[in-house]
Length: 79
Image: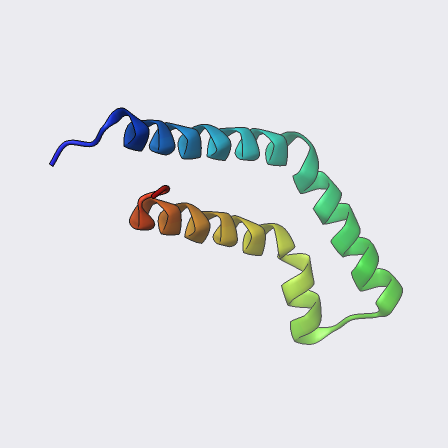
């Protein structure tokens, strides 16, 4: 079964958006989330599982992006 141009553009759009997101995350948002999470742990005195989950927030966001990209690819990305 061949995909039409519309299906190919949807895949290219998802790939392009994912690349832009990764670049922006590496340049700006990753450091911002890291600073925010360190401040949250310090100010609120978090320990244990709470501190672990907050300290690894960049990891959880990365896992969410990966799951989202796989979901879009599995679902077809469009109509």
